[in-house]
Length: 109
Length: 115
Image 1 (cartoon, one colour):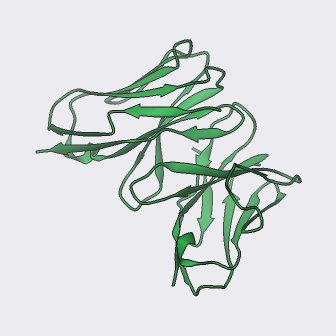
Image 2: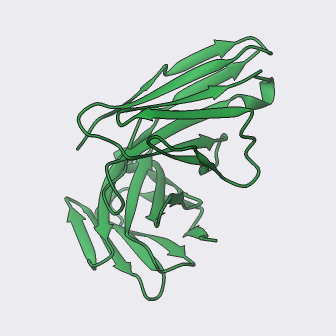
């Protein structure tokens, strides 16, 4: 059974810091991995999708890497801003999409 | 990205009644749809996977008679919460994808409150 864990569970940092969020999964036979953000009481916003054959994807200040063999993905956020405050979720796709436990991020001015 | 529309966004119902939530893929045909439930401050829990024209596959611990899922067409799946009770109050989110190994797109979610 696929298990997806995210570390840290919560993070509070001052504005401007570079951040690393971690996602680990137990079954490496995945099709792809997605990163999402979720604002309180809202739905999901897709951030990045990494196919299993890819090593990383970048969008603006966000960079996600994937090491399938070790069952790990990292989301790097550069120069964090208060608007980045949200819960970040990774999800691994096999024949079904399984979500990680989430990281609650707070960036204060 | 592709659009998945979920309705209603909020619903309040009385205990004992049934509630239907719709999930539509607006600009692509979705062979697979997923239904998730999210409790406050927790992650998304997969309830079931539905493939068009087939019976849904439920995750362990999810009551199939309680949460009826129908995926009758390539653009529509419905989740019906039958005989709802206050403990069914939650945030429900659907997801759709065209094929295996393609990106999954998510609806806006439905906040269900049973009183």
